[in-house]
Every structure is written in C-alpha cells, then in structure tokens.
Image 1 (cartoon, helix red, strand yellow):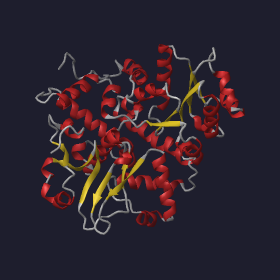
Image 2: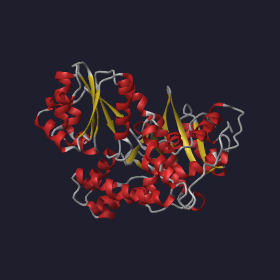
Image 3: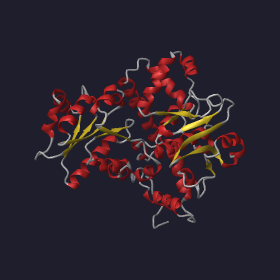
Image 4: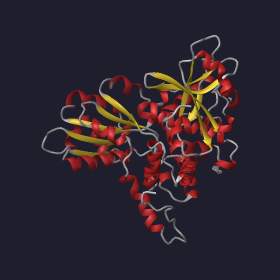
Length: 437
C-alpha cells in the first residue's frame, strides 16, 4: 500500500468541514492539469496559444498557474481578466493599448488574457498584435464558444495560433484533484507491473464509479458532499449552458434544451435529424444548427461512420456522446449507483468514448455499421494502423462470433473488447489500451 493510509477521514458532524472546504478551494490551483505541460512548452513559440473548452473546465486556473510558473522562471508576464470593464475598454479602444499593461523593460513578455470573447473584435485584436508585435508579446488567451464560432477566428488567425482543448478531468486528474494521489500511484502500478496485485482495487472501483456518475468538472471533483455535487452540476446545466445558448444566438431556448436532454438519453445512439425534427417540431436545419452549437460549446461529440463499401455500410448518420458523464447524468436526472441503473451500458460506453477521446482526439474516432444492423462501437487510429473496440458492460456479454462479418471484412483491424464488470486487476490495462484481446 506504499505507506499510504486509506480511506481518508470524511467530515463527521461538521468537525473537519472547515479544513475540507479550505482543501477543496485550494487544491484546484495546486494540482496542474496535463495540458499545463503542453502550454508551458508552447510559451517559447511565436504562435499565440488559444485555450478552448467548455465553461467551468478550469481554463482560468490554467492561466493563473502559467502566471505563477512565469514568475518562478523569471519570465515577464501579466494576467488580464476582461471581465474587468476598465481593462476591456482600454483594449477595445485600441489593441495596441495592451502594450501599456506589459512590464518593463521592453523585452518579450507573456500576456495571459482571460475571457477574450468580451472584446468587440477579438480576432482582429489578436491578428494585429501578432502581425506587428509577435516578437515582443506572446499571448495566451481563453474564451467562450461564441469566440470560436466566429468565422473570422479561423480565417484571420490561420498560422498565427495553436489551439489547446481543455476537457473536464480525466480519471487520473480526478484522483489527483480529489486528494487521492496514492490511488493514482496504485493505478500506475497496475498499468506498469504485469504481476502486481493491488490491495486497493475496491477503492479504485468506488472512485471509478463516482467518476462515471459525477464526471470531471473540477468544482464537482473537489466537492466532498454528494448532494452538493448534484446541486453544482445542476448549476452548470442551468446557468452556464444557458450562457452558451444566449451567446450562440439561439432563439428557441426550450427546443435547444429539450434536444440536449434527448441526446443525453440516447448516448451511443444514432442521431437521426429527421426524427429529432419531428419530435421537437422544429426544422431539420434548426436541429443541425443546434447540434453544431453543442459541439462548438464542447458539450457533445458526433462520431462519424467508418466505411469502405458505400452500398453495404451505413454512411450518413453519426452517433452522439457527451463529453462529461456528470453533465449527461444531470440532463437525464439519474445519479443512482451503477449497480441499479438501467442505463449502465450506455453510461459505460460514453465513459469509454471519453477515455478514447482523451487519448486520440474525438475527431479521430469512428464507428462501423452495416445496412443489415451489424455494428462495432469504435474504430480509431492506433499508431500506424487502425483498431476496433466493442464495449460491453459485463464480460459474459462478449461473443466474438457476432462480429464475424467485421473480422472477415477487415482482417487487418484487430478487435478489442472492453468490459466494466468484473472490475479486476486488469481493468485499467483494458480501458487504457495496454492489452488487446
């Protein structure tokens, strides 16, 4: 057990509550997300760094951590939050007013700009500063989805920026952020040591199920009370998703929200625009627009079909997954324990998708299905080849013979099965792709 005691003592009658609240408030700024290392390495590059991701995923915290890093390394840096109306007015008046905020002497410095979408014309702001002052100023900026949906962002900043996407926490980040780094170390041992048997496997299973149920938003991860986790997820659903709706110019808020709930209830299912249009009584084009907005807001991912035979393989309709299972469960209003859930298969498949998306990028994942109904859940790149993955909640549901058509059609693509139950010593090797069965 590596000298670590577990379980951690939880508050009883409020005795330890103040200390835990201080812990929850501070640990997010202490623990560095994996994306921090990529951003740190990019500080020396001429391109501007643009951080994307859903609201409340920790983009502002990343900027503050970069500010601390710059201070420790003697790199000149300034942090500007554009929710500050005074700063916003200065930069709107003239992008070159940014130079007033930069430290002296006039050598290359880093401007860490939070909420850049509040500028009247953020794309022009970044383009002007890059074209005229990239040798003096390195900009690292965050912004909401409204900024990234602006066509000018792509057109005017081509070759001038690199985009970094911050998702909600992965499972190893979840363990670190929730103060269970010893379980993170235990998981690493299970991944690396072939004959290692963990005495903490049951604790890892409990945390994995909690991660599936409540997701990886940092504020949810650091909240110790289960009911408060639910309350905070509802706040994200009702407040922050609503801001996405308003900033995206959606007129029919009710239809948008109902579509979001329908998609959450059919994760892993085919998205049929015609059916959704008829159900919601809105135009096909409106459904497609809402789907695009949900993608740009980093709430859903649409997985396209993999095909080589246009006549036999279904090639038009995507499958849908949510990028955070906690938000998904909030939308369907179900936080029951995994053992009693009727949708545990869908929740497990969505969790696997999220793991794969973290590993290879959501855009690289496809699924396979024929017009006759034969299907494989995921087809994705694996180094210089492809691999296929079929997801089953229970290992006794695995029947390789059912996938004979796929195996005969694509003998060069290995097929792997991932199951949740039983949660054994090889679970993490399976889920993180260390072994192929």
